Image (cartoon, rainbow, N blue to C red; front, top):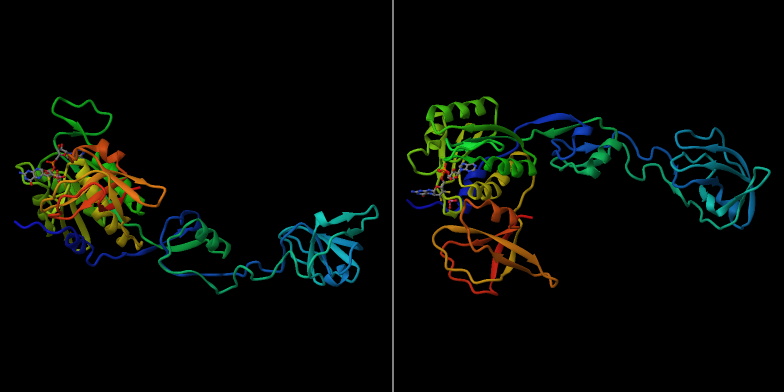
Length: 402
Ligand SMILES: Nc1nc2c(c(=O)[nH]1)N[C@H]1C(S)=C(S)[C@@H](COP(=O)(O)OP(=O)(O)OC[C@H]3O[C@@H](n4cnc5c(N)ncnc54)[C@H](O)[C@@H]3O)O[C@H]1N2
Ligand code: MOO
């Protein structure tokens, strides 16, 4: 059977994927979320002409020549305006953030003054008219568009929304990913494995990749290689309203590879199964209404590469986030053999050279069970199907992982 090319598989997977719905979250919980609605200013900031410095609010006309002595008629700390007006020959002691009193149009920083014994202040340096005052609305004014719909709320954005007086924000619901590991041989980390058993590892990496693009993860543990058991766990994931359900293992063609049958039994319409990719050939995709199923191969590296290539873009789409893979040109450090029909994702060490080029050194062994090389690799060399042998020094495409 012809294997589906990677880009076509991705296209089918992403077809119709869009954010589901929105929810209201408190501003303190909003960082990392995506805005479902634009944010406009509910107030003006600063709401008054404010002093930008600690010093003296004066009239510029009074300090055209220095030194000059002014009467200090009161003070204005932040949060408390001066009740009165600054007249000719007068100054008000003022602090950063305080409203500039009427009559004053300039703030002289205290370093450029000398307080006299009689309480008056001597201005000893020239200060340009209007200096050290933040005019009302300098940052924004009521009604201004501050953040557009679809904006990923980072540190600056949540502080801005807070300053604009929003106690809550309308954000897109995070896509919910359910992960089900399948296999009689699997035990959770910390167990005492029997002679034929191994530790389940894939789910942790898949979850980490999903969370990195803002998804919520529901780890549904390990289920044995039994059709009713796998079906019932998938049913549970559907009941939990998972947007995406990932199964790990059982995607291939062995007698104990039951994922496909279980997914179909639970109503999945198959989109594709088996793609021209290494690792990750047995990748399966299907849908049931708006629920998307991804059957990942059990080999750990295959499931993690599939997560980078397929799960990340899918969850990003469902969460309303922009996403593009970080693919660059690099110089091969070693020769590579001609490729077969599967697009190859070869674990490699990428190195940034001082001249701006990237060199890529593939790991010698690429077995898809080897997590150690995957965790060491900071990139994947992409080898197109049927790519001819490549010499050291030739240009290749790399996917940066970090
Ligand atoms: N006759 C064929 N055999 C295989 C083919 C094929 O095309 N024809 N494809 C191979 C490829 S490629 C892959 S990848 C694997 C994928 O197989 P499955 O998805 O059915 O995975 P399992 O058989 O369940 O497991 C494979 C391997 O991975 C281990 N595993 C499974 N789940 C986990 C987990 N959560 N954590 C850690 N390790 C896990 C499992 O113990 C096996 O060692 O099939 C090839 N075979
Ligand atoms: O897809 Mo498999 O990962 O080549 O072993």
